[in-house]
Image 1 (cartoon, helix red, strand yellow):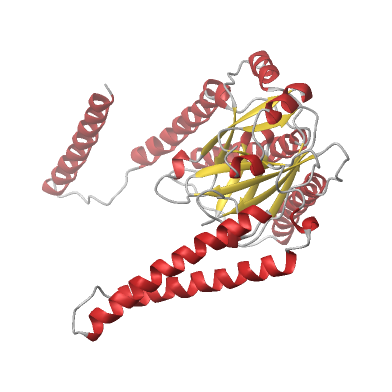
Image 2 (cartoon, one colour):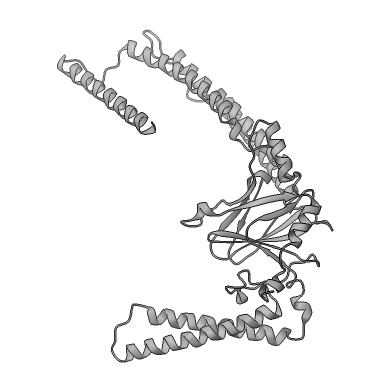
Length: 398
């Protein structure tokens, strides 16, 4: 059906183009000036502009009514009401300005189209008008910016409470991983030096550091053999792939540097149990982000590869995940997932689930970077997190 509609539109466009071309050729054959525009044509254009304006405004109204149901339901976070209010005020001003300016434009096109005996009025400059359309928009924009900065400050700089939960979200191509604190309510330290296949977040525990050093030494031994063999081939006149030896040597150097870092960690903290405190009882969840209703969530964001953006549309929150540094955001859910279904239904909208998505084009499979969010009551939340193994038990294979 869509293909048939497209084909019909193309045929109509071609037909109109042919008719216009035929009219142009007929005008030339009659000896008329094809570039001359008659008063009748000018008036026709003016009337068509008015018709277009009416249809244009009507279609805007239809779109707002028909597609309004696809707009997100009410905010699911406490701070989101402020964001929605800021958005509504901004869009209201834009819509009113848009309608007034375009209505005036279409009206002026019709009122002042070229007529016989009508002379244009020369109006080169007016200081009062210049001041008006400079100062008034400036005041409106400054007011919006001030309101926006105040709202952003209120949202970003909320004071931590004793009941808030600290979470860490780690982004990588093309998935999310969330880390919760254990009974101590503190997230353990992390470091890129201990990232391995079994410790993708780089969580620092005595066991993970020792294991990472063992893995690093194995990698060093394997790369030394590769470099030795490639070097031997080159010395004997064999042709190897371009930069293959250089890449192997660079990788070997990087693993050796990581080995030295790990040995330093072990030496400095072998008798310092407090350094690793908080890591063993952390909980790593890879399938769903769980939040508790009415409990502030303090997020720390990291990225393991490229720039990502953690976007929580229903909670009116977004923060970039930047490689090499941590970013932060805080919000408090005010509805459980079940309650949100009822809230959306009362507004004539459909809600399926809360979702975290990446809002930066981070690679070929960016579209897959979606993470379900479930908001539970405090009791349900505690039970769900307790059902997962701690990182220490998971790493030890228990």
